[in-house]
Structure formats: structure tokens, C-alpha cells
Length: 135
Image (cartoon, rainbow, N blue to C red):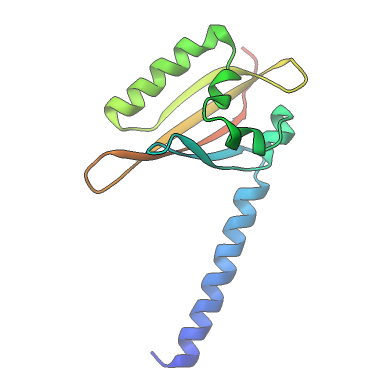
């Protein structure tokens, strides 16, 4: 491969990376990533403000903030599903209510995927949450 082609590929890859970044950032779904090693949120997109009314920064300040927003009656389900995800190392999905900044509860369908290192240990979890239909 000659140098001009390599520059062209780099430009194409750069544009693709930018498109992907915009897709994730502007998604109507809440998208997030959590560092399991350091117990901290490493990414949450702006949809969290649109759907729940919280600034993204709130999720970086305290690692338990997301869980604290889950309706008390739904925390057992969320904990049990997260246990299954950690034990089986597989993607989980659940429907729970989250307290919005306005004080009301919003039902979200959430999917959480474990990201494993080369030894099979969970190092990060990534998730998506969308508005769920009311039962």
C-alpha cells in the first residue's frame, strides 16, 4: 500500500469514527459504560438528560447513582439480573422503573452486556436503556 492510500484510509476511518461517535452521543436510548475494576461510570450519553432529567455529570460523581434511581420495589429484580450477568457472563435485559429528576418514575427496558478481558473476567459493563411500554 502506498502512502496516499494509507492517508485516505485514515481519513475514511476518522470519518467513520466521527459518525459512530455522533450516533452514540445523539441516540434516543441511554447508552452507558461502567468500569467494573474501578467501580465508576466512564460514559453516559445525553439521552439520560432527555429521558430522566439528570445531567450526565451526576452519574460520574457517584458509582451507585444509577442503582439508587431504581424504584425500591424493582431493585431486587435488577440485582438478581445483574447477579446472573456476572455469574453467566451474558447479556441481560430487564424492565424497571427509574426515578426521574422531576420525582416521577419512568419505566425503562435495560440491556447490560459484560465486557471480558482475555482471562474471562468482567472489566466493563455496557448498557442501553429505552422507554418501555407500560404494562
